[in-house]
Length: 83
Image 1 (cartoon, rainbow, N blue to C red):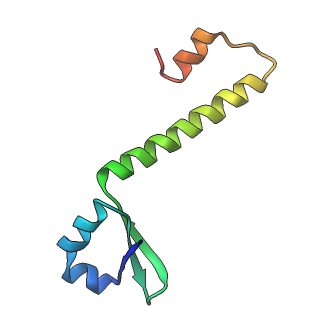
Image 2 (cartoon, rainbow, N blue to C red):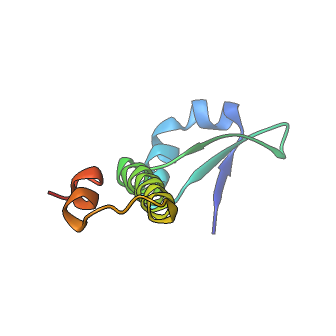
């Protein structure tokens, strides 16, 4: 189930929607249908940012692996910040 609110509903019941965002994303809708914003918990945000950074690291490693130049396991770990 997803929680939605209009901007005016969010303003008038901000505390309730912020509490709900700790459990699930809260979508703020403009004109009833257009997504204006999504409020999420700090934990959800941190996990999402980490996942995006991990994907970027995996993509960079894959691109490095396609280059003619060989990279050592130690160099790859250092490049990915895994030392």
